[in-house]
Image 1 (tube, rainbow, N blue to C red):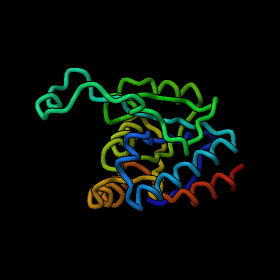
Image 2: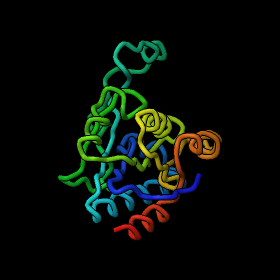
Image 3: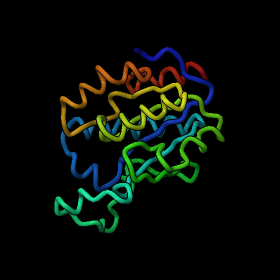
Length: 188
């Protein structure tokens, strides 16, 4: 469903745009998504709207399949640092997650409710994982969900397309970063 309205207090939630993840996704879609997500964050800040930057620091405690596959449990230094392009500001809200959804065991719902947020605008990497999981949770929590489809990317083009075309219309509204910004401009 196309974007129909911007609520009085939307929040931008940017998923996993951290140095380690973005460095692993150097294709043109990822590069374009980063550009659009950073543009959205700049515009949300300019309008005094909440910006939530989410990073991931690993797997949920107790998960053992990582050890079976031979990966290390220790993450390299700086692995979870947000990319410089996001230009993190003092007023931004930082959320660290250990699971796919930015809502699970992070306090994100409480933060958004305390800020009076009723609408979440989602962007980030990967579309079919962190973004989709967060969108499902936001929908379950009752937020008006907007998915900035050109501000997200997935290493699997088919998975990205499936999320955007089949899953997201069931969870909320979809729009480009420009369409979202234009609607914010029209309501402020």
